[in-house]
Amino acid sequence: MERNIAYPTTLVSEIQVRVGWAQVELFGADIQEVQIAIAGDDRSVREMVVRHENEKLTIEQPQYGLLPHFDSKWLQIQMRVPREWCGNVLLITVSGAISVRKIRGKEVHLDTASGTVRAEHIQCDAFEMNAVSGAAQSMRVVSEKLQVRNVSSAITLSEMDADTVKVISISGQVVLDFVRPFRTLDLQVATGDTQVHLPGGRAEVAFRSVSGKLSAEGFAGGPDAPGVRATTITGSLSIRARGETE
Image (cartoon, rainbow, N blue to C red):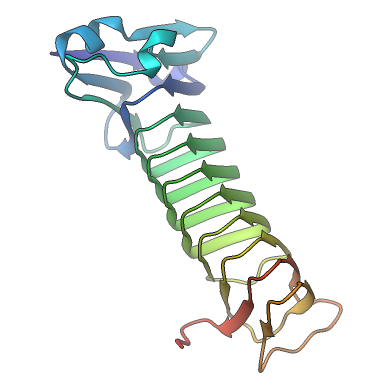
């Protein structure tokens, strides 16, 4: 079963999705309106709630939808917005994957518990991505403020362009690749190792760890250098020139 809904772009300034186990996809396209396609087994599609109030578009599963029905097979939500659309985005799912690409936004918030969350070619004022057991991945996110949290899986951020960055990780490996120097980077890592790839050859590093090690060979500090503040328990931090491999 499939449901298709469309709204004029001028009537949508915020998109919110809260679901238990659906796969969620949002991307920009050469279209003139906001388009929604919900596909899956008949019961799950019928029970989806879609509301449009005060320029806010909300898509939700019923509370009991947090646990899949025995007769359910799959559920997917695909949303397309015009490339020039710029609004707030909040996507939350418990066990499904989230994929967002080629959009502009004001505040973009992506949150999943056990699914993978991936963002590609995003431009916004503030970007936040949270995952518990699924991987958190991004490619070319441009944002003034960026924050990523993950508990037990890897964080991989490629071609990042951000001023203020905060990354929190418990046990997964963290790889951060920046196309230009950030202003500040706050790292809070428990046991996973972190690699930061940074152009420019400058970084002012404050590193605290119980048993982890710091490697920043070839990087000089200074008052105008990007600031890195890292706290770990057993994790190590390696800062490398961008493009350099181990």
